[in-house]
Image 1 (spheres, rainbow over the protein chains, first blue to last red):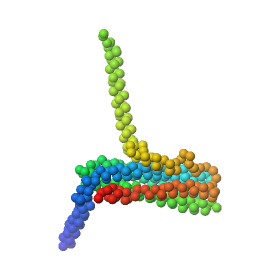
Image 2: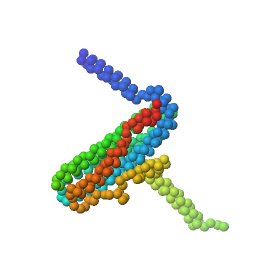
Image 3: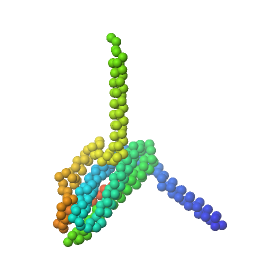
Length: 169
Length: 115
């Protein structure tokens, strides 16, 4: 009896999740039609977004690099040269450096996904286009996460520096 | 006029050398292009077609190294020095936080025009 109930539960679960998966990946006909009809303008917007993102990426990259190499690292060195306790500044700097690497790597993946998306003919393959758009959104979320994380680490460094400054008095 | 065997061989060798040079050039060109795409340099290259106008937008607004203040790794350390550092640090932080980069809605259906 117990085994029958277990089989029944598994069967129901498979039915529910299989159906959910189909729903998650199926593209309604209306949506496909909308994509097909507006393909040119969608791609135009996407290209513009890709260009804007590239500008932002370059600008952020320059500022983050400056922050890491000209500010954080130099402050850490200066504290070390003067035999002062740098507290957690070194580990925070290392964390920043690691996350900057993730940001760079994830941006490449995201940009390549957008380029792939732009190569799809959305008048003929709207479903595939929308599926790849979903992937691009996930990659963009990753890049945004890295951006937010870098900003959090910058704030941590700033807070820790206040503590180090107290120690200099 | 008869062509000597030596000059004939020389001509053939020259042709072979030409093809070899072209082959090496093409191979290195493909390798360079592959490296350009996979290394991430392509994503940072604002000189690509269509991107040039964006380059001018980023050019004047960044704290790049040339001509801009940098905090020295050498010298004494004091509260005044730290405050000087904090000012430089704050300027960069302000620029970065003001960017509001990679917002989710920018890739949304509405923003792309999928209606």
